[in-house]
Image 1: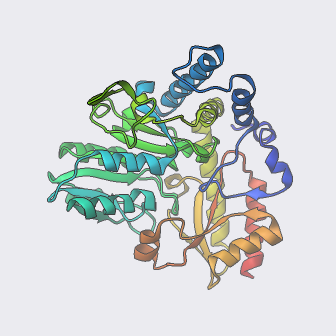
Image 2: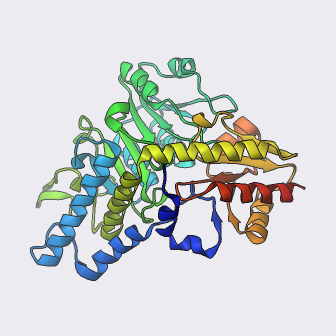
Image 3: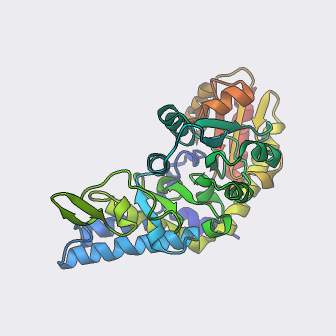
Length: 399
């Protein structure tokens, strides 16, 4: 059971009186993470990896230690398999630019993907001549594995799929998709931006070949994220950028790349942010990701139940709470989603997101909602009382 009082004390921003229900866009950051970043700037501010002086050695030790903590958090076999990049988007683009795609090949993805895991593959197809096949779920976000079986064949080079929809909150059967893809020799890249913050993660169990995720959605700093690369693909995968820090040797006519993960982390990295992400993983480990998952389900169940009782409100995504994380999208009658969000903010001190949530194919193809939805997304520090106040605000706006 979460100790909500203790958790909320770690987030001083909550004292401002705002109910923060925009966690799918970016979570809040606990004091422990803020202080860990400040520790770097105050106590051992220096560049990493190549310095022999004490500050550089201390920074390098913390930086490398953060890799180990993050790798353990997602179930990776070693820190070598986790490159620290800027965010999920950069990780997905690294994969897209590294793999070879040819005319006649295929990429399989889904209609519920965030743009970062959709237009990336459209660009690959445009450049290479391969095709993109899109699998669709039902209106609650449930996929029929028969549709993946029909789409994934021996010409499939890659399957790109999210673990959790950032609009519907639905959970995607990634492990089953991986098993099917591997039967046909295809690789799988997972968008873990929403899955890693809300669900226990074990990349070895799921079998994914790549998984990208962002620190700012899981209590960490902005500007840092991770890319897991499985051991089999680690030295087949080309870096997105090369330069300082990515090489082991350079001559006039060639170079040799460094060992992983250094080969993927060109230039001076986001040292403080990486160290902060490591601290965010420690925080979530102490709380327990199983507890986070249970609390998500409890709050989202009440949100869905309460919204369904309000005349004129339509919700999207799974009706069963166990099938979603703490993300609920909805609309109020004919009202524009931005007007609803603005009213909740200015009149009720409730922060939600509005618009298409970087998922226009989902909005257009599945729901015919090019103007988007209102999205309420909760996290471990939100409370049932906040949910009730939110529901009261929506009822007033709808009335």
